[in-house]
Amino acid sequence: MSSLDAAMTPEEFRRDGHALIDWIASYRAGVEQYPVLSKSSPGSILEALPASAPELPGDVTAILEDVETHLLPGIAHWQSPNWFGYFPSNSSEPSVLGDLLSSGLGVQGMLWSTSPACTELEMRMLDWTAEALGLPAHFRFDAPGPGGGVIQDTASSAVLACMVAAREQATGGVGNSQGLSQGSSPLVAYASAQSHSSIEKSARICGIGSRNLRLIETDEHLAMDPLALASVMNKDIADGCRPFFISATLGTTGTGAFDPLDSIAPLAKEHGCWLHVDAAMFGTAALCEEHRWMHAGVDQADSWSFNPHKWMGVTFDCSCLWLKDASLLVDSMSIMPEYLRNKATDSGGVVDYRDWHVQLGRRFRSLKLWFLYRVVGLEGLRAMVRKHVEITRELASWIEETDGFALAAPASLTLACFRHEAGDEATRAIMEAVNASGSMSLTHCEVGGRFVLRLAIGQWGTTRDHVRRGWDQISSVAKEVTSS
Ligand SMILES: Cc1ncc(COP(=O)(O)O)c(C=O)c1O
Image 1 (cartoon, rainbow, N blue to C red):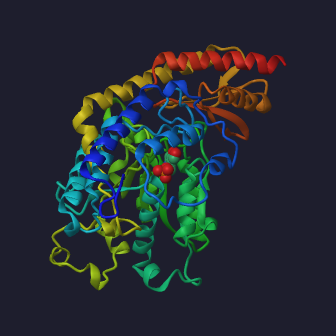
Image 2 (cartoon, rainbow, N blue to C red; image 1 turned 90 degrees about the vertical axis):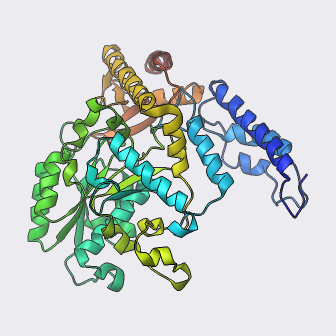
Image 3 (tube, rainbow, N blue to C red; image 1 turned 45 degrees about the vertical axis):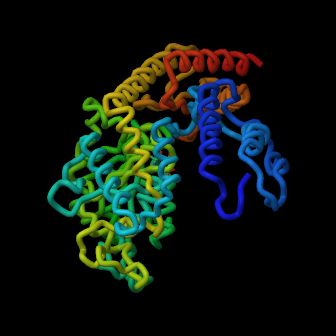
């Protein structure tokens, strides 16, 4: 029981900590027993929770009982090997431990001086990761030049930060100091019609506006068409607009398409645009040499980001962002109130990560990466990538061989998109039936105006057997749906 002086005694903390880790370990070992998606109705969890906070102290055992009774029914089990929806959000055990240590240390690393280890481990982790992915040396701190990397919470924040830096570069700092003036040439950004909605959100937030984001048409692979990009840019310039930012996606959310970075990069250079690369899900594949074809053109990129919190096993949230010239980002984000002044910052010799994103305060997130690398090793991560890519290849062949089904887009590294020939309604009914069964999760997207199912492989526990069973179920549900 807690007292007001200390929320828990060290003994209580140890005892309850063990109980919690035991609970988590059992949950994860038995995660397959739960329906993958929650069957809760809106408001049902809310109703089960007391309307006010307790006045008196309680204990962790009672909280864990409530987790089981009230929260578990409202959980979508992202760590289930039958999770095939959206993209995975792998929370590997080593990174959970790193996260726990981060909480336990309770560090707030906004400045180098507020915990040098927080900043310097992060710098080292970003260098390790850039090297492991085969990214250009100029993104690393340990190479000569102004490059470096940072952990952002999400890919959305990463692109927002880069768009702000690009805006300031394009306006010579006027955006920050004066605001974007109505009279000057509108700044225009570009991304493919299949790009993630976070690009448009960034354009809205940083004052560019949705109307000045051009969503470029895609080719037969659903990748950005560079000829279309060139022609839209030329028209914009003729109309008095100012291209300033291009985001290329390596692995789109809908179908996993790869924009041709090597054809887009020369256009960015010709028009003086910032070139950002969003490799949120499939950047992880670059751990393996055989997938580094995606790096063609990367030398020209100003920024490159991916989410270790998707496929790579780092518990949410962890999005890595590298910049060829980090000073452009720092200059656009830096504000120095007196209360943050300190000798280390004034010396100019340290990295203060508060200047690399919107928020001031920051957690010790790099511990999650450090634990992952040290426990699993790069070889372990590469084996995981290869396993999932291999299973996806098999899945694509099963889809093609099954009567009534067709791939709706070329299968990507670990994502297969398909539909049933009976039409959109039948395809939707199949998804709803398998999701309602509780034995897997599937999500959908739209391709060419058609309703399409996405089966995303990448949860760490997923084996060929899980996917085979999943596909057999989809096939048999399809027979029921189309015969009724
Ligand atoms: C290609 C791509 N970019 C960006 C995002 C947004 O990721 P986050 O949730 O980290 O902002 C996603 C999410 O799935 C994505 O697939």
